[in-house]
Amino acid sequence: MNIILYQPEIPQNTGNISRTCALTETTLHLIKPLGFSLDEKHLKRAGLDYWDLLDLHVYESFDDFIKKNPDAKLYLLTTKAEKYYDNIDYDENAFLMFGKETAGLPSEIHEAYPENRFRIPMKNHEKARSLNLSNAVSIVLFEALRQHQFKGLI
Image 1 (tube, rainbow, N blue to C red):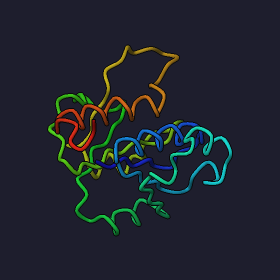
Image 2 (image 1 turned 180 degrees about the vertical axis):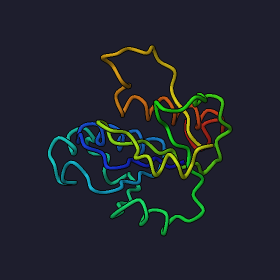
Image 3 (image 1 turned 60 degrees about the horizontal axis):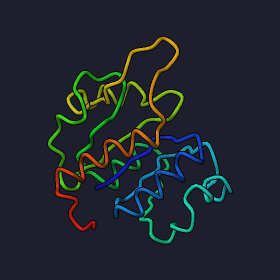
């Protein structure tokens, strides 16, 4: 499995996600610009001492990501979708893509992959837009892993 974070802004979220990726043998892809340095202490603290277990790839842009992963099967997680994440048959090598915390994914990515957009169901509230990024990643990743019988995990 693969997690893609598009321009993540909060180091603690990315640190938490990196720890989840390390313990599930999931590759983490970060698309710049990042809202923090990869040396940031809050990022490192949230990821604990698991950094050497992580398969991490960093890209200069979404185009750079596509150029280096031309066959990636993308699943976009967004509050703007109508289909739910649990109604997907995930590929074993799925690329689960999440947008930045304050703005999500840009419209050009939505437009390029209209059939690959999914959401986590939640109550519609005028003051609350979405779940915390690291929680959303965990929910969707573990559904994808469950569909493949948690292959390689104990």
